Length: 195
Image 1 (cartoon, helix red, strand yellow):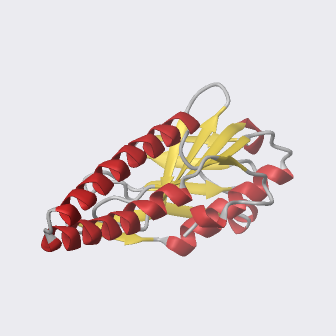
Image 2 (cartoon, helix red, strand yellow):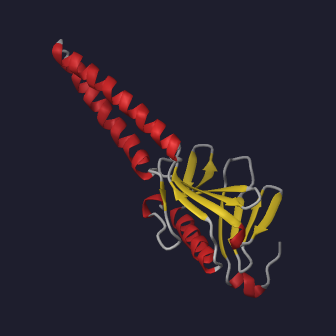
């Protein structure tokens, strides 16, 4: 897909590697729409054809600070855009500024095109409710273990449970807080879901 010089000047681009063995996923915001190239496939989605965007916080073991944007097209098709890129077998590098700038510009261009896309953030409501229910059950179980350890005087166990609970809260708390389901407007992109 070739761009004219005028189009190239007004284009914003972003690329990342989703895996070590695959090719880079490349995206450009042109005057005509969102141009993408993933592997051997490519396409151009006009801004008014984009039906939905979902932003979320999706940490993985190799990168605890990873964000994701799922872009859907009316009539079918979905593209995932990640804020990290594989560098080596043991290194996944963040691309915070590039991802943030690309997503903010995508929203601005969609608004300018008069898009009526559904803009959501976080997990789906049912998934989020299931996560909260699981965490509530886990909290009750941990509290029960803590009380039992206190009753029998197992203070090493008490310290272990408190330490584990603090670490778990720190790790999972950010995920739950950032992924709270919400809707937003083109002019209010959730800062907590951008690097």
